[in-house]
Image 1 (cartoon, helix red, strand yellow):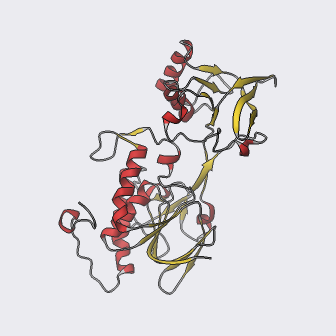
Image 2: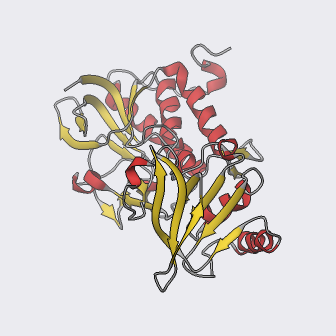
Image 3: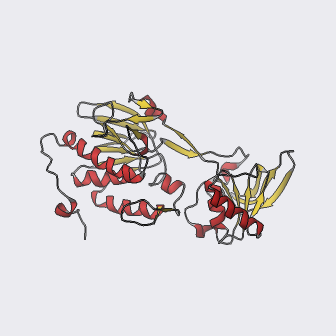
Length: 337
């Protein structure tokens, strides 16, 4: 077991958690950050890194991946310590605050906890295909980080939601061939996107493989050569493929958070909107996982909640120091140019 001490433990390294690092740092509070994914960014990285976001103040449009990169740079002067690929399994009260223990045995003692876990721990819904594991990360992917990685490839996309439709449209511009496998003619995507998908299919730029579903995989050493699909009569056919993108949504759950004794409302943590404190003293919740009357699930609202939570936590971290509010333009940022 490795042991650490920190002023604040932030659970969740999505955009709201990353901005929380900055707000804590401006108040001279040191952060350790725990996330179940192997990278920062949460859903911005896992689901739509190359999609534009239009409601971030000061940015008429910014790609999700660029937003996360900016937030990481903003947090960097405060030297956060990241603990990726692990989740907080245990939470215990201590004389000075709280102690968390992660799934890999990492233990962190802190004065306060800030939960910025979005909708909880999440991962892809994997199709039940034999031998799937040997292809994952090599030729089967559950997200698209860079569109250019698929240039000249034969790509099979499975699913009928927004992610499947949007990426089929986008990758049709760079891939050798894009085929979309779906169980029914109707898609669960935005009407404009579905109309564009069908226009591209009519022009021969995308193959709609309907009504079919995934049946099996063929290939060697993790590299696909064919995707096998079956229709409603269980008749199968083979489709040449370099890449399979199964877009069947995410499995989300609160996990151990549900057992921490916090007040919950429909799997969200109830907080005091003035401080973002939960029913447990010294534990705060911000972003999508927090709920209160009038709550808006917007990234910009999560940023404000992060600032409020860190200011509220200041007295726990520095009980002998008065908090003198200053604007960033007055106090500056460490190591800033």
